[in-house]
Image 1: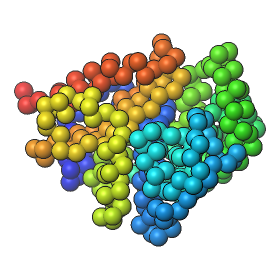
Image 2: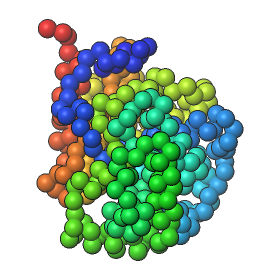
Image 3: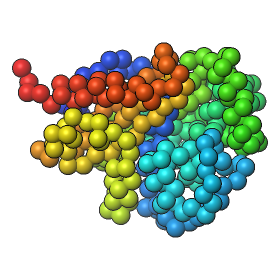
Image 4: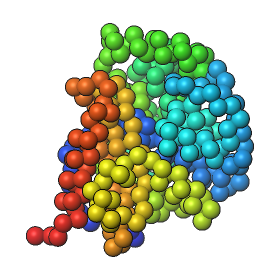
Length: 298
């Protein structure tokens, strides 16, 4: 539970709050925040349209040419669409998304890579990633430079080619530590800090905030919350993510009594390769944590 004015934690519970985890698709809310900042400066129009090309298609089917920016943002959050995400991430700029974390001083949070870049690196197809040991520790200009080179590497291949090589990696060479080196990452504490700022001190205009609220309310998790079933939720924003042995669920809850709650569930190296069936267990943990922070102090 956070103070809505200072954003400081009022009460908190957690396990491994300072350990680094891959964010999977939970990172996509940072792309939305960066997009809306660009919208407020006039750089981005919600009606601008994009076609899917060999260079911008990520993994997963995406047959929707001519989609506008507003609808891409909905697909990114509601459908967790990777191609929509990558189009928007590159539209605002790789560093602009990283700036969401850097501006908050979140030194363990990396948000700079579009989705296909992670998989190209994991599949061993990025000469930049393969040719340096500096990526994991890179910050500032060095990270931005390497990220741009990794992104250039990733756009050389068709999505189906990446998928075949990635399948081979998962089937024969999978390393959970590599997910932390390749994917966008954070800690539960740092990402919780980002979420609190995202919805309580976003710095966005009224129009951009309305866009943000409408889209983020479409993210997964509201129906799984006990406080929602009890009729206590005034507004909800959520985003989850899953991958090979990875599962994340993050959210912001505005309760009708004025209290504000943030949660960040992160898992890497699960004993199940396909992790969505673990959603019920994940929300059992999330609901227990929410109940603990909302309970009266002893």
